[in-house]
Image 1 (cartoon, one colour):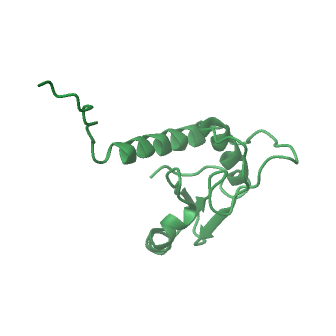
Image 2 (cartoon, helix red, strand yellow):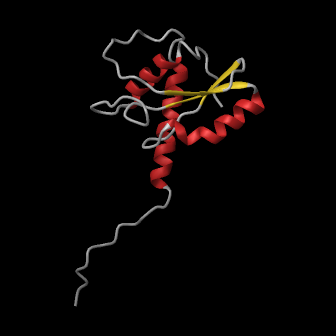
Image 3 (tube, rainbow, N blue to C red):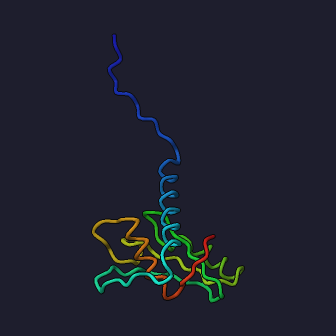
Length: 128
């Protein structure tokens, strides 16, 4: 008698998390590649929520993965700000946390929006 059961899909633990890490890394690279003076956004551009901790001369930006918010970095940001004498900013991506909702999430557009929100407070963020 033949086995007619459907084959089981193989699960690869951590694969989804690896993809999210790759997407966040790509967004971080896109942010660093933006010109220092980000293009002006229209009045209808979604608002990006920024969390800022610290007041040092250096400015660090911590990005969260898709489906989370900048609150993810709360404890680490406070520690980094104190230990490194830096301003640590953790923005919420569009449609995440306290940022405005968008009809369709797009990493390229998210990079532009976050870059525009950061440019007045952190014109040259350091990659860490």
